Image (cartoon, rainbow, N blue to C red; front, top):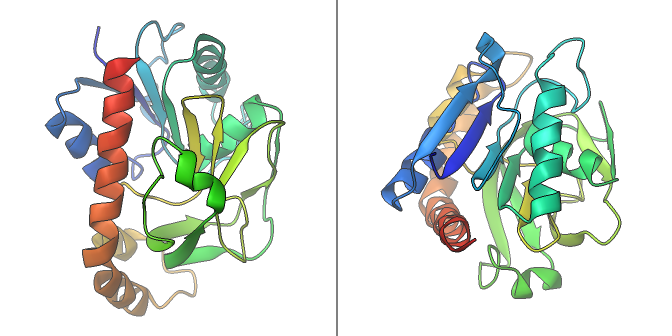
Length: 228
């Protein structure tokens, strides 16, 4: 059995550099391309779990039937204390499964490289401790967590979307942003009124300082996964 199970929810939403980093750290990955019809396993077992982004709300089973099985894995990870990292949709799914609230078209959409502020609570967190107070990451969303689960630890925020990062329990993290993508991902977006060239230019300027931060977060998640 591989070390980390990754659920991919969209063709464009693969693990990208996050997968490369976890592999560099010695972990073996199983990527389930659920959007193509690949079956989501019924049990997580001893693995860590990563759930990636996608253009759905966490419970839109009518549009994405595999989400129910994915939510069951998130529930298992929480109940069994398995390491979990949820990105965008995956972070929203963690919030919903743990008792928080997610809404579509919530607040002001965020697109492109975005300044994220770490909260004081991050200083004691296994993934986020010691990071710069403000760091950039690429965002691309209009749905958002609007209420954190009970007892969640709020780790990072922006003005437009307060719940950028949080932890549930000891080893389950959700993030609204995309630490897994390079700036080039922006050029793959549909042109819906965005100036993609300008968003790409700004992301390239931020990349040299942002990438080492998210590489370190990936390393720490790898360590948590190995030691769990």
